[in-house]
Image 1 (cartoon, helix red, strand yellow):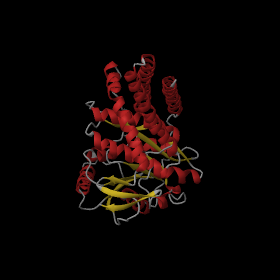
Image 2 (cartoon, rainbow, N blue to C red):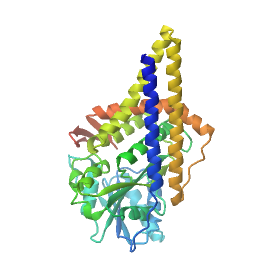
Image 3 (cartoon, one colour):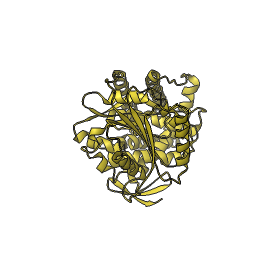
Image 4 (cartoon, rainbow, N blue to C red):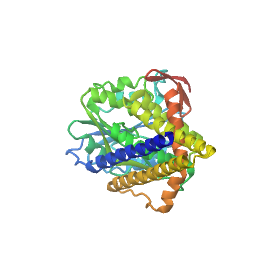
Length: 407
C-alpha cells in the first residue's frame, strides 16, 4: 500500500513538473521581442564590482560594443580603490575609449563611499549609484561582471521596458559548461529548473535587469535596498505595490560556459540564491515547497525501496524502482525541453547552444541525482539560514534583511 502511494506521488510530481515546464514554454513562445520606441530613452548602465572577476575585461568590452540607437552612459561602482577590480576596470575603460571602441557617451568609475552595517555591500553600491544617476537618464540597466552581453542587449532591455505597464524587465542565467564537468552540470541542471520557477513566479534576475528611472524612488525600492541582501528579488514587491509589472525577457538569457566551480562552493551558492527568495519574494513558500517537497519524496521512495528489498517484498520494490526510473528519465526529458526553449531564445541576439544528443542526455541523467540532492540540501539550508557569506563578506539574517558582521 505504502509503495503504491509513494510511486503514485512520485509520478504525480513528475506530471506537475511537466505542466510547469509546458507553461514556461508557452510563456516564452508568446514573448516576442517588442520594437524599440523612437527616440530611444537615455540609458545608464550600472555595474557594481567587488573583486576582479576573470570575465570583467570581456564584460566591459561587450558593454562597449552595444549597438544602442540612443544616448547611454556607464557607471561603475567599485568596493574600494584598493580593490583589484578598480585598476582592471580603469585600464580597460581607458583602453577602449582610446581605441575609439567605446559605445557609451561617458563612463564614470567611483568607489563605494560608505559601508553601512545594514544591508549588503552590493545593495549599498546600488543605492549610491541611484543617487548619482545623470539627470537625463530615463532607463537604468544593471549588469553583473560575469555577464558578457550581446551587442543588442541594451536595446532589448529598453524595448522590453518600454511596453505599457511594464516597469522592469530582466533576463536570466543559462549555464552550458564548456567541458561538461560534474559540478558544472549540477549547476546547469539546477538552473534549468530555477529558470522555470523564476519565470512563472515573476522573480527578477539582477545580472541583466532594466528598470524605469521614474519608479526607483516612488516605489520604495531604493529604500528597501538599505536592509536587503540583493537587489533583484527585492524589486518584485515594491514594483507590484506601485502598479507596475515585471516581465522576464527570454532573449536576454545570459549564456555562461564556465566550468570552474567545485561542489561545496556550488551548494553554498545555490543556497544563497534561494535565501534571497526567502528574504525578499512573496513566492518563497512555493519555491521551498518545490525544493523540499520533491527532495523529501525522493528520499522516502529510496528508503521504502531499500526496506522492500531487505524484506524481500519484490513486487513493492519493482513498483518503486519503476516509478523512480520513470521519474528520473522524465526529468531528463523536461530538462531537454527547457534547453530547447532556451536555445531558441538565445538565437535572436546571435548566440547558440551546443546541439542536443544522446551523449548529452546521458550526462544529464548521470548527474541528475546529485543535482536533486544538492538542491534539497540547499533549500533546507536556505530555510534555516541565520548567516550568509557573499564575496568574503559575512552577514547575519535579521527578519527580511541582513546585517553585516564581518568583511
